[in-house]
Length: 99
Image (cartoon, rainbow, N blue to C red; front, side, top):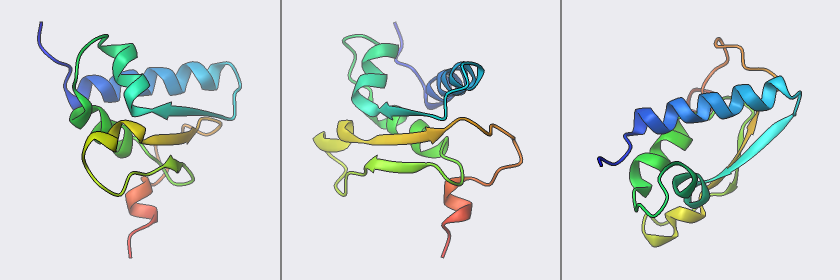
């Protein structure tokens, strides 16, 4: 079985955000290690998982845990996604925080 791609993780994040929005939740928090384990039990595939999480961040979303070193602690990456406004016109986190 092939490992998930960043695109597969991204698609699952979109589903999770929509499900939470439909339940009228304000936000969801996603931890990279837990998300990877949920999507691919027993598989080590943090790089595309983390990339998908960070790429899915929109303006207003935030890091709960932002590892400063890319290594084994990458699994600690935890992001709060606000799901009350899933408008596709929202700027990405990177666009909103560009210097």
